[in-house]
Image 1 (cartoon, rainbow, N blue to C red):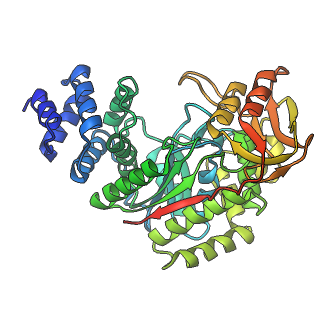
Image 2: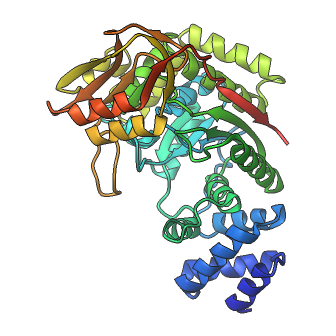
Length: 433
């Protein structure tokens, strides 16, 4: 078998076999297929697309290119949740203890962030002492004993995806639905979950900028999951503005605690209930989404979820006192209010640029080598559809430098005030088939 023959076959619209796809993934992973041939192959996929069977075979080949986590010793159905990303996405930090509080095992492997703000692992590291790197045996033991643990992804999880993603990034082939779907699902399948809930975001702050692309990606990933033997569901959610109010690390942990106390932002709380309900149903703990939601509401309102979060923090070496005393986390030296320049209604918040403003403060990484300042970030006090009066606080900036003029102007430039508009719908669709 020769790589040039696979490129030619795909270029001419042919469908690759499982053996041919395995040949490509194995060869590129071990270095026997050079970058220039892999780049050409990616470009043919970009233009010629792939069938569902091809995408599934590509996903499984990448999943099996490195470590495949065996979670079979964890009792019950293990349900993983994955978001395609956004700004202010704190859902995992609330979801993990909440879903665990109703008896569903949450064995969550999360990643770090590159861009706007930290990833879930970075945010959890804002908790003093919290250990995000767990040996597999300890990870499994914690989930069996307490139903929940969150750890960083294995260094050798889907290495083919790491190599291919880096190549896509420099060959203008990132925006390919088959390549995006196989990248995401290969890591989810290698992570050992029995079932998968996907949050596919759409809008300015998301990877998929329009609802059509988001819907196709969601349907593709659900099909991949099911063809790979994983019960899979997807939610398409709005990311035309940040989710919740906090964009940072410490302040997002504080927002997660407020949500577990029943005082969180309405959109974040709703997102948690929607995703959590699917996780509970897929785990077999409830027959309907309505029944699952009622279980989650009871766990949150009774305080069980908050106590589970404390337990999770303590189990992973963190200080559980921060749940009742968030000020024990790193705090910014300077707090600045950004007042509205005029009265009206918030018409638009450009999520991506607001996230970049937080990154400029130090809440995210421009490169993989950058360190994160956990204490900084921005907090929105007004969301799209809300009225605001001149002089009323739009945003609070948390900074460790006194000069925040550029960040303030960036926030003004990306929050539009004008005539009345409706609040955007949070849930844009649910895909089960």
